[in-house]
Image (tube, rainbow, N blue to C red; front, side, top):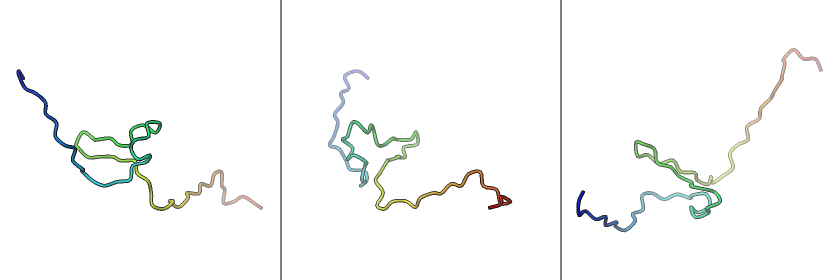
Length: 65
């Protein structure tokens, strides 16, 4: 392209989210990514803590107490 110039417009809000660190904490790194098909993956804060997962290892039903 000869003579073409880039003229960026005003930013447009695409969606509302609560990004971890407010999106400006450089210590956390980038909190989003865009997939090749244009979909967004955003790391957000949860409203409530998720239920814990309990993992039981080396359990044998025939073990005697």
